[in-house]
Length: 212
Image (cartoon, rainbow, N blue to C red; front, side):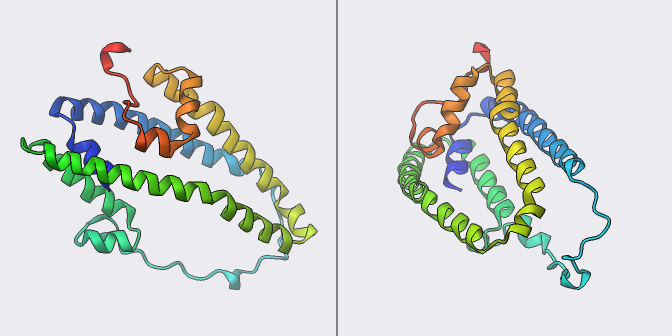
């Protein structure tokens, strides 16, 4: 929330318009690629005529989603506590757009920069602990799964890993390079350590349109 408010609020009207057009097109393109890959992945799975390990009685009715609470930020603190990401994003965008039209905002923006740096340091500390959690979850799954279950999951695991590698190291970096003009090496260096480059770094992560 702090990053969105700070990023949008520090822009001018021309910068916001250019970012909305170019960024919206880039996001739509990335969404289209990911959606297309999601639709193609099931074609890799073999067709199963019967599945003795599955029973329709095990399927429970999905919980009804309240779209008003999910998208309309009537209470931003409730949205934060309940992890309603769309409502938080909409609220942050609204505050950021409002800040764009305020002239005497330098002091507030500097405070946001300090708060953003503090949250960045906290996030970096938590990220350093994430391998321990991943190892614990993986070890628990590997220790409780049977050989028969591994055989049934091997197609899914191989497809999942191959798709992630294809998206991470080929498709998405290639799209970013084609849109921004960055080299693939630069893109990979940025995504290597997001907390440092995207939060703590003072250098801009994009080039002005005149340099493309």
